[in-house]
Image (cartoon, rainbow, N blue to C red; front, top):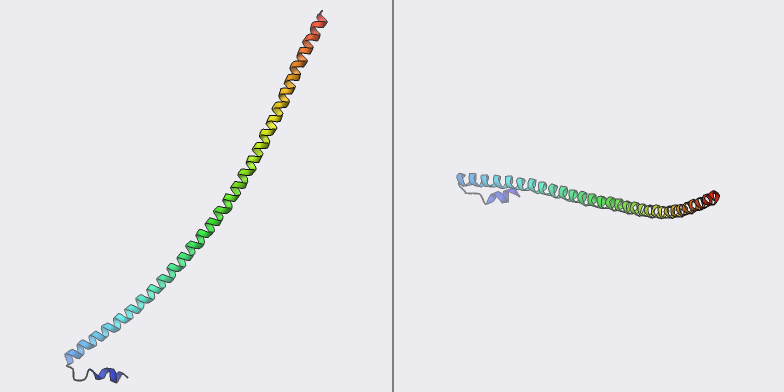
Length: 121
C-alpha cells in the first residue's frame, strides 16, 4: 500500500522530496503530540470527575453529620427545657411551702406571745 502512497512523489525534485519528508515528519510528530495531549486531557477529565464525586460525597456526608448534630442538639435543648420547667415548678412548690410555713410560724409566734401575755397576767 505504501507504494501507492509514494507513487505520487515520483518525478519530484530532491529538494521538494526533502520538504515533503520534513512536512510528513512534522505531521507524524504533531499526531503523536495530539494523541499525548488527548490522553492527558482524558486523564485530567477523569481526575476532575473523580474529584467532583469526592466533593459531592463529602458534602453529603457533612450535611448528614450536621443534620444528626442538629437533631441531637434539638433533643438536648428539649430535654433542658423540660428540666428547666420541672425545676421551675419545683421551686414554685417549695416557695409556696415556705410561705405556708412562714405564715404558720408567724401564727405560732403570735399564739406564743398571746399565751405569754396571758401567763403574765
